[in-house]
Length: 564
Image (cartoon, rainbow, N blue to C red):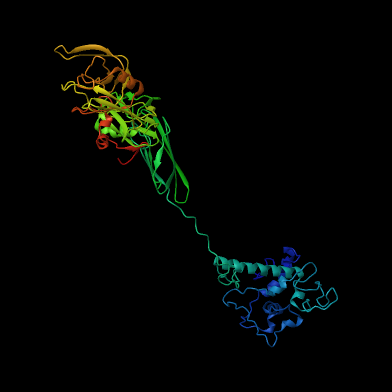
């Protein structure tokens, strides 16, 4: 603060009242010289301290008047500020301290602040001719200050009050002396004004950390292995795996890991786009890429039964034969890749009827009208140390509306036909002799096909040789078992005399030939020789428990594992 400027007066002092700085300095010079003379320390107030000091320390209840230069009898005398005798004496200008009501009242051009009457140079006569106790009179503070000085003083006081509040809000103190001008807003800004504190910083959360299998940039990746994504410090919001095909996946319940479904293609580049969110919801992205291997050996599908877009009987299983054998340690992956779905839904299982062949059937015969689909998603599936499938396959068929079953009783020499559970025909038959070479296969089989005629021939030695065309022949085993017409056999219904086929009269053989379809059930009982599952479709000969024992993956419903 500049010498000669005290609290409540702006720099420049009274010179700010319409007088430029040069003129104000010239006018002050003589007075300043006189004031620089040292004064004695004054520890208490006296009337001789000057009118300015009286005005500055006067009570603030009302505007001072000419008689206010002296303290009243009932008012204690204010104490003047102490001055350090060891310091250079500073000149302090005393400025009237006005009550807040003075500055709160309306003032305008021609009015003294807080007064009702226009301000005039003559403090004794209000401009409106009325008396005003608040008007500036001779000898009063207002009479000795120009109007603009009064307004300036009020403005400074208001700023000082604001400064006090600001200091309270920010927790600052009003320290510092009047001599060096240090300190801000001390005053009476009591503690707790504003009471606020700086806002708390926004919480921060750890950035999600990703891990993937395979790693970014990996080469010669086994396409039969699942792609996995894991995230720490967050949750997975999106995963896209694309390359040779879009691949779906399964997200864990806690959204911390993702596993691809199915297998990938061989010798293909893939990209994985991952998004995860931290605990505050902020999203982080990551991309990786890798390539799958090119196999040194491949395997494929040789045949599928019953074929697509056909209607078959209730005893028809699905059969898939491969171009090479599949080692037992890889069979579960092959089964898993071959998904059977049905309408209505029904559970079933694959069974390895041979090292290169697997069949799928339900626990019981198919329900008539069932729609069956098999999706062999084999491309990329590993089926040996260096052997991979390279192509997918599919199969679709329908179970026909008629449930036809022929039950052959070799001991009773008769056959009974059932249609949808009702007996529709019974007729005499005979079957193979007791010669072990010619005993008819027992078991539950399915119709493989039909022919009219079918050439049959055999040479068993000792003159037992034949080569004939047989009519109305319905095949049930690969080794040559048929239900056919045998007009030369005079022992039908009496003695088992065939080479293993089921002989019937021409009318009965013709009837069965015409009514039967591929997949219809033919069950033979009464002999000691049981048909194998691969000699035709002997699948139903096995109990369900036995059937499941030949599966590496177990029972499924719509491709999903179920309890057997």
